[in-house]
Image 1 (cartoon, rainbow, N blue to C red):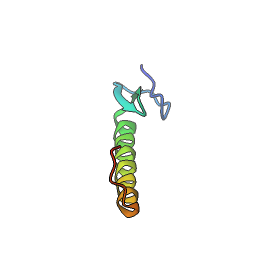
Image 2 (image 1 turned 30 degrees about the horizontal axis):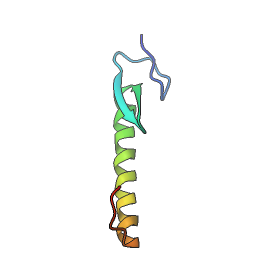
Image 3 (image 1 turned 90 degrees about the vertical axis):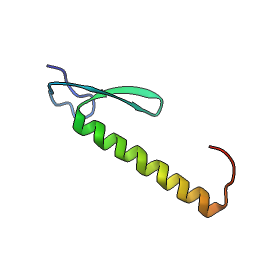
Length: 58
């Protein structure tokens, strides 16, 4: 059985998720958690840029 690289549990199926430019093979639960973390990071960066008046590109 394949093993998740994030939680190290044996799972039936692995999902590929791109994190920080690298592709990781993780279980579905870890993939959901990583996607949520990326969305939160993007939203917080946007808020900080708006607060500082940044008008450039990312």
